[in-house]
Image (cartoon, rainbow, N blue to C red):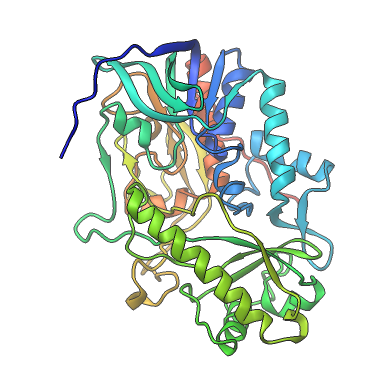
Length: 422
């Protein structure tokens, strides 16, 4: 059943050089890079804060970031200045950040750069002239508006705007239809860092502490309390001495861009996190005061649409460590396919081969069917296995920075690589 909507006039809010759709790690970096290079830039975000999966998703745990310079390193440096990075029991920094501090930092950086921020603003359509996007049409508390720009960058994660503009896309594993599960992350308090050492892997001791054994111990406590988690490798991530992020949920078989699926996965995820917290608390001892103090505004979607670009990154590229003349990001993260079904072990699927460090070319971030559309983050053009590697947030920041620079200058920004401190 359908209805026919009446024609209506939509107010043009403003015209820009660059319009970034989605303000996750890729979108913030894209907007910063474009604005700092002279472009008049707007940043459109559907939630009430910047940061995407880091903030509204509560997964402020950086991956594949240590060799990234540019905006990624700047973020880390500024977090350190604000005493907002997570620490290991030894006092060294880990991969975590304080979510609330990170929200403010991203806002401060964007405002200082002159980015025009619009929160609670969801892109719902594209106004097209052939292969050219003229306006991003949005809906927000002010109603239905249009944002004009010369160049648009899709950083929505699921490729929402690219599809609205008519670009092709891939989804799932070709031939099987398998998709990785979503995860619902939470924040725990009532625990103490030293007590939690047996249940986590400090990032400064990866050579001596097994990746798997702390997770087995953590899962055993949950199961002793009466709940076996849907993710077989539950992870405890320290943010403060008494504040931790927890990732212990898998939601299988749901589509990340189908509202009914996302809703059901969110409801199930939140319910499981409360059950797990209760199971932990029932064990007393170091767990007696544990409380679930925050759940995310958005569930973590690993796999959405992969917009078709002028080049598709393949499993051969990551297997062989491909390099490209138009590279904008260098990836060190390996293949990371979370089991698409419970029957496959509820953990991470082991591959018969390992990837080598490889480049992401600008061509994989340029839409194939729309002339003035770029994309950055997990919705770029790649196949199922390649996507499982490049999708993490350290790479999203580098991609966003490259896309914003290209949109503002028409030039390629080579990968900003640094040698990490020992």
